[in-house]
Length: 369
Ligand code: NAD
Ligand code: IPM
Ligand code: MN
Image (tube, rainbow, N blue to C red; front, side, top):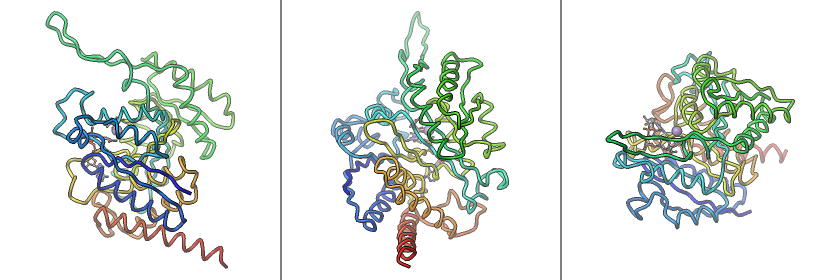
C-alpha cells in the first residue's frame, strides 16, 4: 500500500516535532511493508521569507494532490505586527479552508505516568479522556465582513461570527458518531444566553441528536465549560463546539494532560485530511531540541486512522507513546514532579520508534504461538 504525504514543517519548533512524526511513520512503514512518500513544502513564516507568501501555490497544489498533510506549526514574532492576512497564520487558515476539513478532532488524555506534572491534582485529572470536536471553517475566523475602517477620525475593527445550519449539522454529526464509538456522551458548548449564532448552534445540535438516540447530549455555556474542564475533566466525553471556543478550550484541556506539547489533532470531512499538533511554533524553546514531539507523533497516528484506515498501526503508535512515558522518558515540559529521565526531542522520537517495533514484535510472537 502506498500513500503520498505532504509535510509542512513550518516555523519554530514545527520542523523539530515534524521530523519525529516522520521518523515514526517511516518505522511503521518498514515494519508493515507500507510505502509512504514524503514531500516537504513551505508554509507560514519560512514561506513568506522564501516565496513572499504564507501559502505558496506550489505548497497548495502539493497538498491538494496528496493523500494526507502533516503540518508542524506556523508563526514567528517578526511577523506579529502584520495585518492578519499577511501573517504566517494566514497560511494555516488558507490551507485549512482549501482542504475543506470542517471537523477538527483534538483528543486530550491524561496519562497516569505524567499526571503529576499537571497543576491539577492527580485525583482530578487522572483518567480524563476528552475528545474536543472543534468546528474549523466557520465563525469569527472566516466570517465576512471583517476589517479595520476609519470614519470621521474614529478607527474601528470588526469580525463577523456567522454559522449556517448546514455548517453546524455536519460537524455535529461527526461529534455524535465519535461519541457512539466512545462513552456515548456529547457536551455541546456555546454562548446561547447571548449570541444568536449560539442559539442556532444549540437548536441545530438538538435536532441532529434525534438521529442518535443512543448518545446523551448536554449543553454548557462556554464560560462555565472553562471551569468544569478544570474542576471535573472526567465529566466530559465528546466536547462539541464552534471554532474560536474550540481553539481556547483545547489549550485549556492541554493543562489536564500536563502539556500543550501532548495534544494532537486531525481535521476531517474535506478532500484531504490535515494532521497537526495543537500547539504553536513555541519561539521561546525553538532550536533547542527540547520540544515535546508527542503531539506531532500522535497526529501522525491520527493520520493513519482517519486518512489511511490503518487502525492497528495508529493504535500501536499511541500505545508506544504511552510506553515511553511509562518507562520514565520525557521532554522538560512534562518532567516537573514526575521523576524519570529528561530527553531531547529526537531521543523521544527514537524511543517511540523502538517501542513501536517492540509492540509489533510482541503481536507477531503472540500470533505465532
Ligand atoms: P505556543 O503553542 O507556540 O506556545 C505556548 C507555550 O507552550 C510556550 O511556552 C511553549 O514553549 C509551550 N509549548 C508549545 N508546544 C510545545 C511543545 N511541543 N513542547 C514543549 N512546550 C511547548 O503558543 P504561543 O506562544 O501563543 O504562539 C507562538 C506562535 O505560534 C504564534 O505565532 C502563534 O500564532 C502560533 N501558533 C500556531 C499554531 C499552529 O501552527 N497550529 C497554534 C498555536 C499558535
Ligand atoms: C490552533 C492555532 C490556530 C487557530 C492559529 C495559529 C491560526 O491557534 O490551531 O489552535 O487559531 O486555529
Ligand atoms: Mn490554538
